[in-house]
Image (cartoon, rainbow, N blue to C red; front, top):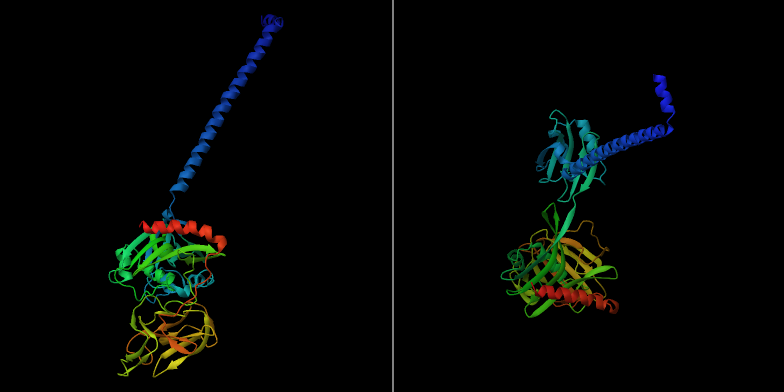
Length: 426
């Protein structure tokens, strides 16, 4: 019977062909369905894994360049007169490991410059029995040093920062310093203004009613404001005169210019130190507080705390430096050109390494305010000589640097007009 079925099947080739075709279609269908299921499942798995990885990376919090959530963090502060070795010893590190860590190159971090009051942190694995993994010392608000306690290596890192634009406007009631505070601005900006307008405005003579307007940027690190500023535009009204400071890049150098395109920087600074008060002016007859008699005072006395930096008002050559017991105490003399010479007296000390014959740049520190010689308190006696004769330091004229060139005039006008309008709208 089986044989007859076989013969009947053999006898019908058309049915045999249909059978073969149907079988092949079925196999193909199975392959397609299986492939669809397999690849869909794999793709979904890969996508899920990718999404998971992405979420994990996105959610991971980094601090000091490390995934901080995977560590136990012990925050601390460097104590007065505490060395790095003492700090690490307090965390139980061996003497050999401490020695290895303190041998890092000074170009990475100078371990001798650890300062009291600076934050530091010890990072350990979440497993409480593990030894500490990292020690971090915060050099400043932006920079930090990471000590790897496993490999005994030290790396230096920097937190990312951003600049935020701000504005301020105020009227002087008692001092520019207080006006800045009242205008919700850092008093540091008062010092910056005295630098920018130092060739044109006598900040020791500002009066009640004088007004300032500022557009500036302040640097932030992790939403923490730093005491770093960039002034983008400023105006200052002193008495009946208005002064502007507009930054502009010319010949690769950014300087501040007034609204006419003249540089605010001159050959001489208006004063040799930052924003302190005048206690005695240039006069032919002044009562000397030590000698108790009237005599000429051919200089200007600036009262300032001991240690306040004193600048050269212009570039020049140091022609004398010494001590005068019955007069100027520690003093420095600078020849600026064939016409002008300046003298700085009663210094507490000189700038490190300063010697006769040195060439100094404008605004370079040459010494520090003191009370040496015939003096009743810390101050700077500053004198200017024109062709060998004493002249009033507050009245000398200073030739400004190169003004805006003709080819840059149009571009400067666009910038200047925009910033002047903005300042006026504050």
